[in-house]
Structures are given as structure tokens and as C-alpha cells.
Image 1 (cartoon, rainbow, N blue to C red):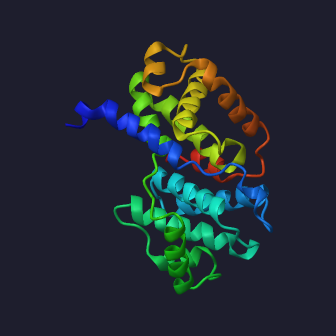
Image 2 (image 1 turned 180 degrees about the vertical axis):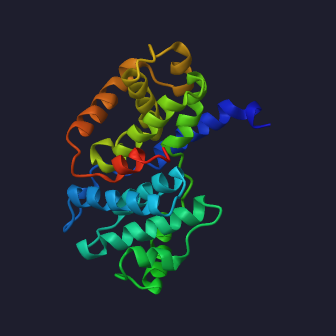
Length: 241
């Protein structure tokens, strides 16, 4: 049944991804925060995500919740980690079959927040976002475009790594998830010498090579200077990946 509506579903996802993009300049409105703090928070959340063995979609949704919330509310420095923990808690409940319990999240925050504080923050964050949690992550688009790549496990895994590093750099905030996914696969294929970006890949991704080159170059530049953030590297260096 789903295959009959694949075009309509893809178009809906493309519309939804634009509706759920955060304001890429939200830090201009924040009084105590700066972009480096966001990167440190996301790096820590990737560790938490890996520790709990959560789905990739959970991580992407959590980061999207953080960025959309900070696009709408000014947050103090001491509350930033609470926003991160709460976002992961919400995302896990939305995406996971069996999400970690609330006590797990307060524990990883070293007891910095009580369960009641996280629950209050959860209600507030959801109200600010108008309970809008439908977010098509880069993973959703990678699955579609991987069909044109014959589901090559090596390019797919490398693409997942490249997609995940974009979470750490605010420079990628203006880019929709579909372009992040396509650029990740495009760069992975280049790095593994898998050949040209074919018409089939253009069709399933919705992007040609010219549109993807700037984002792929940005990914390479971030990789070249991202020694400060090790969580993603350690995660994908493990045997599990």
C-alpha cells in the first residue's frame, strides 16, 4: 500500500522538513549562550544517545527540538543542559519502542536536575513547539536515496557518519535534512570511489551534483578541524558500526 503513495509521501516529507527548520541565526537573540556551547551539548548528547543504544531518529529529533526551542525562547547558560536532557527524553518517548526511564536521564545529568524539573521542562518545551514532533530526519531521506545506491552498506554507514557530524556545526542549520542526507551519500560515494552521481541518484534524492557540492565541501572542512568533538568518531570507530 505504501509503495502506491511513495511520491505523495516524499512530497509531504519535503514540505514538513521546511516547516521544522530552526532559525539558523537564533544565537543572535541568546544573551548567555554561544555556538560553542551548543556544539559541546550536542557532543555530550551523542554520548548519551550511544550509551542508551537509541535509534538514529531519536538523536536527530532531539537536536531538532533543541534548535527549534532555542529559536523561540531565550535560555540561560545554567538551563542549557536541562533543555538537552529534556529534548532527548521527549525524542526517545516519541521514537523508541522501549524508551529509557526518566531516572536514566536525570542520572546521566549527574543529578543536576530532579525528575520533577525534567517533567516541567518537558511540558514547557512541548507547549513552545505546539506539540509538533513530526520531523523527517536525514535518516528518512537516506533510506529513500539508498535505494538508488543498491543499499551499499559501506557507503550507507559512511554517509550516516557524515550526516551525524553535521549536528555539531551550526553552519548546517539552514540545510534541510534531505540535502544533508544526499550530501552525505554523495561525499561517501566520492570517498569510496563509487562512481558518478547518477540520474537515478538525482531522482531519488531530488538534488544534482551542483547543489550538493557546497554542503559536501562543508562536511569535509568540518571533518578537517573537528578534533574537539570525539563522540561521533568514537561511536563509529566501534565494532558495532
